[in-house]
Image 1: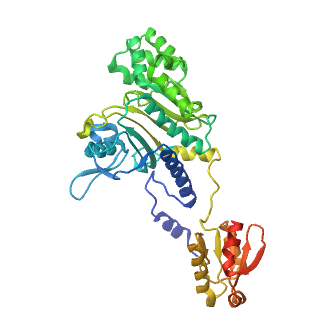
Image 2: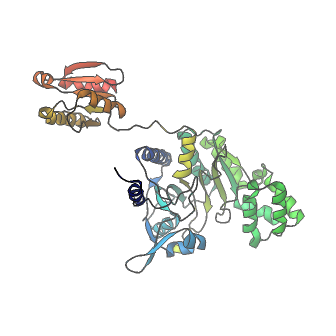
Image 3: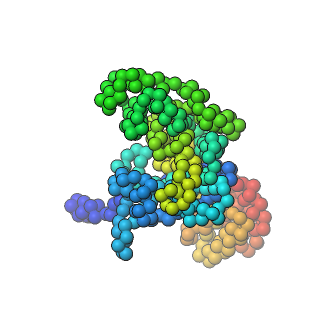
Amino acid sequence: MLECGRIGAIMANKIQSVKGTREFYPEQMALRNFIYEKARAASRAFGYQEYDGPFIEPIDLYAAKSGEELVKKQSFTFEDRGGDLVTLRPELTPSLARMIAAKQNELTYPVRWWSFGPFWRYEQPQKGRAREFFQWNVDMLGVDSPEADAELIAVGATFLRSVGLSPELARIYVNNRRLMDSEFDNLEIPPETRLVVSNLVDRRSKMEPAKWDAYALELGLTQKQLDGLKDVLGNFDLWKKNDELTRLFAALEALGVAEYVKFDPNIVRGLLYYTGTVFEAFDTTGSLRRAIFGGGRYDNLLADVGGNPLSGVGFAMGDVVSGIILQERGLVPEFEPSPAQVLVTVFDEKLWMQSFALAAELRQAGLNVMVSPEPAKLPKQFKFADKMKMKVALVLGPDEMEKGLVVVKNLLNGEQVQVKREAALDVIRRIL
């Protein structure tokens, strides 16, 4: 018997996973695939083409476009064997820009592209955030219109609907950069302080009203500006003053997703990066403060990678937040332990290859079929099939082989029939 000290030493020597990374056991992999399949279906429903970029990029690609914080604090950066600084990709937009610029004159516009792949950011792991995550990216390039913005929002709403997140469970909130700039102009808030004001607005829901007011004054707002700002943030009909948003909501109505969308002047995250409409989707319960997805309209996508100016609209959705919400809502499909619903048992070693041959026949007919890995008592093999939630088990014993028969056992109700081998496929399909 191992001594406690030796057991502790063995446990201590086990290699742990890298902090913030994720291990996808079959059940977690099924959730990831469910999100991917729904994202793929929503993208394809609107005619978007799937693409992807490199998982490793030169750090210079992000230095120009994404800002110092992403490059220096949030990227997994290292020197390759050739001495070049490279990074695991923290986002896809810079790669997209480079790819579009490389073939800008060869592409057919508008470009409608989508992708779902892994990304890495060196952040503090917490609920809803990991250092390694999968992200759905959707973009339309070459069109500058509120109707194009509406289509992207409709793609996102289609995903929400397809996974069971009704408008009562999830909502997409929209705002507009030009509208807010106009309101800031009216309040005489200078352009150089608008980032500070945007951060102030973003913190409003996280602070007590009196403390938020005091903080606003500390930042340099006058009482008149603060009162005016609060009026703006409380005006949910403000969108009617903006032609872009008026057209946007008309298009959303025609697209059949208006029930998912609401104007909210408090949506300011990314407002300085985007140039027009911005939007974010949230779980309405607020159990997670992180957005399900977010995006908006941007201009000059290609300016930093040598291309000609090109406007676009897009959004991104990580699988961590969406996965948590789907699990908490009970919207994840029941896990199927095995993709095979049929088990061919192995009666004994003499008939082992015959079981393999029967399984091969059924696979050629389009069924997913597993063969017991070794001879064992039939009850043990049936028990295994039950644990794997299979629906059918086949028995091919000496008597069946001699007469050209096979036993088909319905694992859902325990009934079994002995049929001719060539008729087994029809019987199985009736059970499935």
